[in-house]
Length: 365
Ligand code: AHR
Image (tube, rainbow, N blue to C red; front, side, top):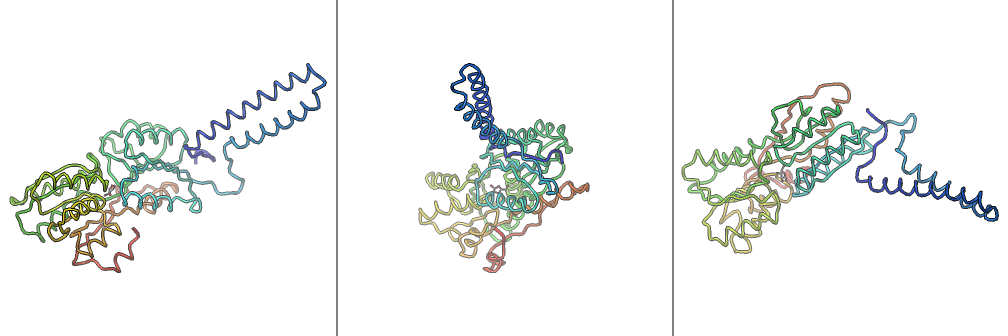
């Protein structure tokens, strides 16, 4: 533990204002004292005012002071978490999982920063965490590239960095302590193998990609590309990024329909883009899951309902419930142990042959 108090950095503005107010009242107090010596008739009123000012100064100063740990009280472990954004149901489930795992009751103070899908915001958040002297930094990196400089800064500050969900690309593996997440290349291969087993060519594939340069986009695209290489009767008829966002998935699908592209498979790199594509198909009286085979990733609750309803043909799991996994890693580090450098989460897939209501209701997202 480097220090026994921390502020949520979004409190910074409030804290700054309190400091301004404090110094304002300090200046007011000293002006009043000067006036007192010049004008004795005002003394009693001024004394009263001075007392109020001093009291206010004291109260504001105590608000602005860092919270000291109460003696005997367990100190909270402070975790700064840089989250990608809130682009999908998966991401929201992931945020909730982290918030629950790093609760005050569990002995943590979580400083959560939503980067709104911008890498520069994630870099700023990490720098803020370093300035605040958090105990651990957790990063869900939006893209694979571009982390070396800021992670070197964290390393220099002696703050362990845990990478979660997505992978980074770096020549120096010492820039992060450990990683936990999905094997997204495996997810892509699972989908391509399922297509080989379950579909008869020729396949004309519309490919809706996640945000370009993120490890799930790269892994799932590689899985499909390998399938395309293996199967001469698979054709890629459209490929574009919908950034894992539902509205963008729908827009891309509308573009495909408007252009009159001939297709019989949609390979959507997450559930939200699949929902958007399904809405676009329905608006054109195309029956999802029957007229067109739909492949997706994540296996979120609503998507699995669509699998049961026959509107989605395959959903490859990408599990977002990383909170307890990251907490287990931090607990190991905190007790002086060295966790595994890489932890891959076991994941399955769901289609009409193996999914039941009971499975859906027993899942955590
Ligand atoms: O990194 C995990 C991916 O990011 C999920 O597949 C997607 O839904 C999310 O936005």
